[in-house]
Image (cartoon, rainbow, N blue to C red; front, side):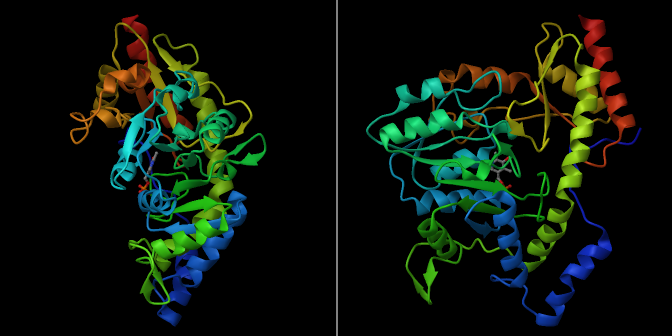
Length: 368
Ligand SMILES: *Cc1c(COP(=O)(O)O)cnc(C)c1O
């Protein structure tokens, strides 16, 4: 077998992309809110079912900008079981992340632990829809209301998902998405903020362009403009998205069938009330005999790129570990030590899944 990668970027037919970028040569308009940018912003706004989209160079810049735009101060409640970007965006805005533990069932923030962490300095909650599992949005809204906190969802894993028929983009004050090559929908690099708040949208549009308004800097902005070649890739990939998700769903079901009775691992249960995007396939290695690390190494030796994810949790990375007490989030630590992501992308084959699962079953069954 050839090496099986964890993920492979979705790409349209080459001819389709070439056709899409042809007008860029004709116009020489290659960046700075050109026609492709305007079109993809509009299409995303419709697709995500939200009033406003502000496109950015990537998801991280979008998150930094929306935190700045909401004028937060003091402390922000968040999860340490996420990509380092979430924590960095808070700290780079001069705010203090306060880490709340997660739920074992779906790895999202444990809402029953939030209130205890609120102080007079708390101004916002930044939860993450981890692996496309949707946070307890009702309870988070309730707590935010009670304590007058802003909510920004890191929805980098939840592109196109719906919860109880409602677009995930409609929760909180804003949601950020990432269109990085590794995500379910990509514009090579890219991202956006989705919001129903017009003032927020206007401010974000200025922040991504150095804070400029008619040539004068109104805010201390950044350079977060998406260029036309990325926007064109976004337009092409958006056309294929439903097909991509359907294929991922098929593959996810195959994994579920083959791993349902494997001893020593736990698969995720289908998510209730959610129209899922099937962006990741995480398993928990719960065996006493085979550790997550051992299973990962075994698969890697078979040229299968399984990856330990969000390990360590963000509060234990080198730049944070001396500043935060990570022992206060024991479930996040436990999950980070046990979780393994298996390969998933639309061109992965059923044969390859058969092979991956036979390797996993071999190790787990002989060791139990
Ligand atoms: C990918 C990702 C980001 C960052 O997005 P980029 O587009 O890579 O900057 C932020 N948060 C989470 C949870 C992510 O997975």
